[in-house]
Amino acid sequence: MDVIVGVVSDTHLRDDPDCQAFLGRLARDHFSDAQAIIHAGDMIDSALLTAFSPLPVYGVRGNMDAAHPDLPYKRILELAGFRIGLIHGWGSAFGLEERLLQEFADARLDCLVYGHSHYPLNEQRGALLLFNPGSPTDPRQAPFPTVGRLYLGQTIRGEIVRCG
Image 1 (tube, helix red, strand yellow):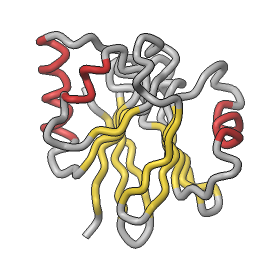
Image 2 (cartoon, one colour; image 1 turned 90 degrees about the vertical axis):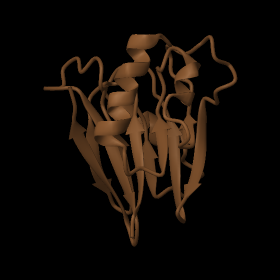
Image 3 (cartoon, helix red, strand yellow; image 1 turned 180 degrees about the vertical axis):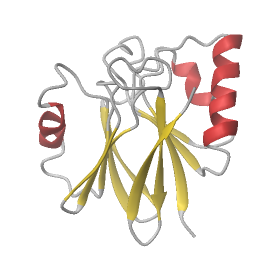
Image 4 (cartoon, helix red, strand yellow; image 1 turned 90 degrees about the horizontal axis):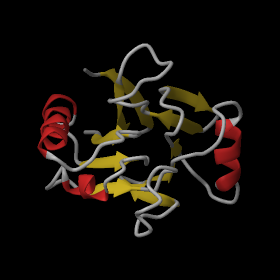
């Protein structure tokens, strides 16, 4: 049976009742069977890390999260036997994946989760899964708002989920 991890990024939300209601709907509609949540940065308010309680939430600081120095810039998670690199990203969307891969050049990863571009990506590159869940609140050039799901079983695979 797969371990399911909900993945979200670029929420750009403040901790208020409307935000809590929105995140409650995300949890109910898309992550009800998840065992953990990953937030790939730009949450704006780090109180959002508790919005999916009692699930464990793993986050990193995005370029809009400068007020949250308690969040790491990048990290490596070990979940269900897989090594998942987690980072937000910076700069132009052009060449973003290559810059982020350089950040983890000395690490053996099964998956790299990132955000920043607001554009979803679920792409296998050799043995590595590159995964960007997009944004559930501000899809920019993406056709619709999205979140992601990772399935950790015999292999690791991702799914981009339309929301909103």
